[in-house]
Image (tube, rainbow, N blue to C red; front, side):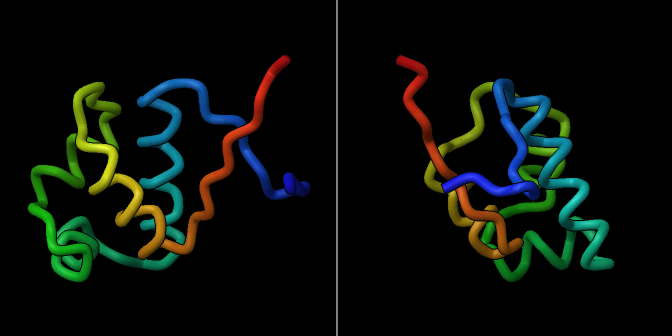
Length: 76
């Protein structure tokens, strides 16, 4: 269910911007996020820059650790 805090994400760049915003709002460095997510700083950096080939499983783990719920909605 969407609410007033929901954001439609339609591109890797938008997802990366959301990740960066959440990370910074929690006063975390890329290194800190990488450590508690079990990924490299390079991965965090690539996600935040909107890399199109980032691994979905790692992205879902990253979002979960940042407190972001991901919802899919059908447009039909």
